[in-house]
Length: 70
Image (cartoon, rainbow, N blue to C red; front, side, top):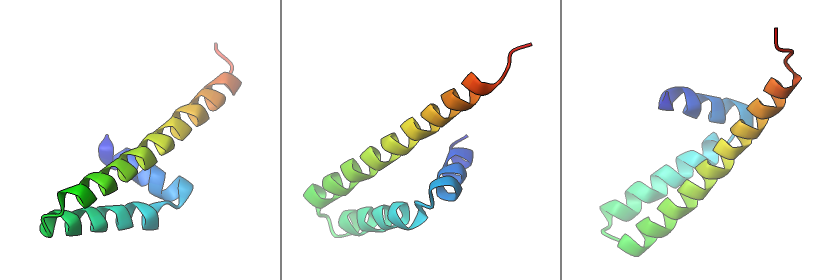
């Protein structure tokens, strides 16, 4: 399921560079034992993902609202 959501986000919103950058910065912060930076980057990443998931939910509601029920 996560792989499908990630693929959807990367294709629909073209957010791959931003998300990949967040992942890279997070790994670098952890590797450098920089807990404050790791926390900051992780929070940024989670906000990005939350925003994109809300966008998916909104898109799906709009699509389902336009589908006629049998």
